[in-house]
Length: 199
Image (cartoon, rainbow, N blue to C red; front, side, top):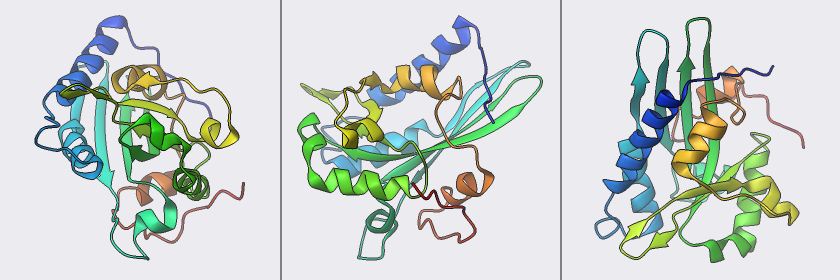
């Protein structure tokens, strides 16, 4: 079922400012490698993004186990999940996305990434890739479509704050299945009752 929200500009601006402030606060000189930077950024992103009488937006992040042959990342291809709880006066929607993180755009061409995206697609129809995107001594992460990468199609590069306001806040992107949303709250991705996508 398609759910949508149409929040006013001041809420979208507030959400962007929240996310950009967390990126700015995550110093790549202290968290240089992709796994450490990603974990540090996600820990900062988690929390209530915006809340008033008309709207509540909250982010929960999960970093998946990545050590060993049977780790969540080795089985399912994802580094992390972002879950958004979005409410207005009439409804509350929980949506989650699976993401594989890469340090540079050159990593998009790797066979490893293609394999990881295909594994993520076994759990959700629209896996995402986050590129950390180094800019001198800073980083400017952006999100792109895993499906378009493996299909060899042109894809957009939405800065993380823009992606969240354009695709997640509106709930165009994300998986609302309750069993999927519940499963990605666990770093081992081990709940067994999820309905796995067959495509």
